[in-house]
Image (cartoon, rainbow, N blue to C red):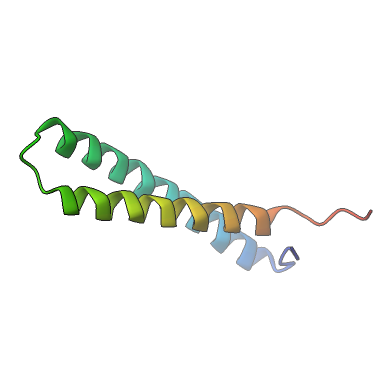
Length: 72
């Protein structure tokens, strides 16, 4: 993957990773709280878990984009 060379773009991507990680942690806590009470909406929990997976994919993609290419 080609790493952007623009320092502003690198900074923006790094900030986005931090934001996504925070949202991922927040969802994790919310899911834990909802799962404690069995009467909670199972569909809401499934949607949160799906969002967590999407966030994880976005974080991985951005982190890979921030890693400089190494010549073989």
